Image (cartoon, rainbow, N blue to C red):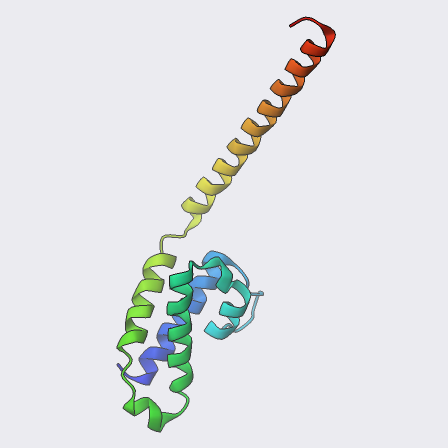
Length: 127
């Protein structure tokens, strides 16, 4: 596990966060620190902590002497966990979520309409 690996891991997680969770502007070079500030709240708490571990490991790689003395097993595990969580978020999942949200909105609207109709019938004396 070299410092170059850690940098590529952080870059990969940042790209996955940008594509899956949004938060990156078109043509912008993104890094993990920026993505954590913008969309870190969209991650579950334990994965956010893993992302912070990976970000800190990436920061350590900027000091070569310290990086050679550091064990990056925690960063490797953090990378594996984050990639396993972020990979499945694709177009199909987003479409399913949109369909579910639309169906829930329609059902809620019908429920409110039914309540209003029953209220009108009761107030008019038909029920």
